[in-house]
Image 1 (cartoon, rainbow, N blue to C red):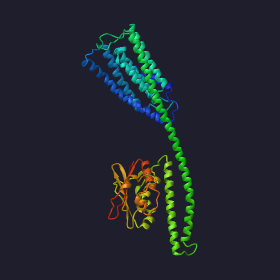
Image 2 (tube, rainbow, N blue to C red; image 1 turned 60 degrees about the vertical axis):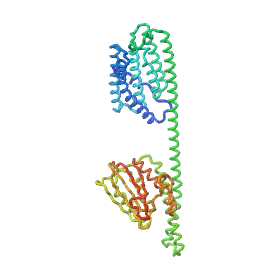
Image 3 (cartoon, rainbow, N blue to C red; image 1 turned 30 degrees about the vertical axis):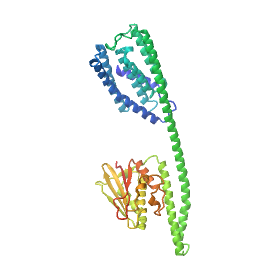
Image 4 (cartoon, rainbow, N blue to C red; image 1 turned 135 degrees about the vertical axis):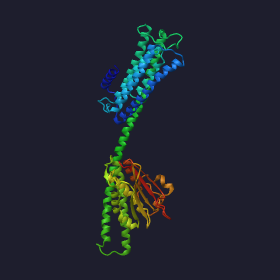
Length: 474
């Protein structure tokens, strides 16, 4: 019987379209309704137990005696709610509910639960005094909850049915068509046989329930519309951001082309293809050549951050972490040799298994940290990379004994375009984008990056910096 009622409600629910107007973000809608459905299920277990507790308190604390048929009715309703709720729990976790408009979706499931709850309230109310029952006000409470989930028309229809039920059963009891079950011995004189009381009660109840539905539904609808409008606005901002990034990449790439051409011409002069160049002139050309390298690095930083902003997914593959870092050391070898910095690598893992990462992105992140460790170091400095494990996570530590980071700058180092005060006065050019790129890449991998200064390599006059990357090894 219980299952047949549920199946009938399911069929009705599938016919009805409960999707709010102007819905754009269906994923958000399904997520919101699903969370409320789980809340329904959780609270229903409490209500099933609360009915039993209520009866015990009424009988043994307030000395209110209920008849046997009333006790049986309360028991059947409470146990039925519990059994149905177990069934609902199974449905919710079984994958039967589909997040699709034309299938049995979370909105249909919510409607199903609300109707079952209203039937339970109707039975409890009838067997606990009818129009004298305090449980009638749970109809109002449930209509408010329904207004937060279902369209206004559906909730008004349910409210009308609730009012129709109360009015009909009240007059059926008054005319003796159905039996009246009093609320124990609480009332000195009954009210169900007082027509004026019935009319006043039904009128005030009707006004209360419809005003409650109107207010709750209007507030919920307004909130939902604002949420959907916000989603639309955010999508437009996202598209505008992507357009801006693409435009920036195009412009910056065009700027890169003439700088590379200048580099080629300077190389021709430095290599002596245009004839002998005086030493003072040669020194100036070397400086110009170094400046073009810095300009290219700045352009690459801007291009990298723009690509990251456009990135929609990370393409992970099995990568040998030690081999990746050694390849970066080879690429940075000339820079390290020129700066007089020693590169070290230590792998402390017990099992040197491949890790699942996006090679291109991770190379960019690690290369940025190694490049900074070399760039902001001094002659005779050290850059040490440690690969280790922390629980189930993989840990990469890149430490140096360079200029370090002042305490007053530590909270701002991962901001875009921010450079520490000592870096600005070091004579080394930079954009302040490198660390923000690193942070974004690591977070794309579900990891975290943090640093400390001084580092484990600090020595007299060498404060140093130490960056730690933690991510799931998978």
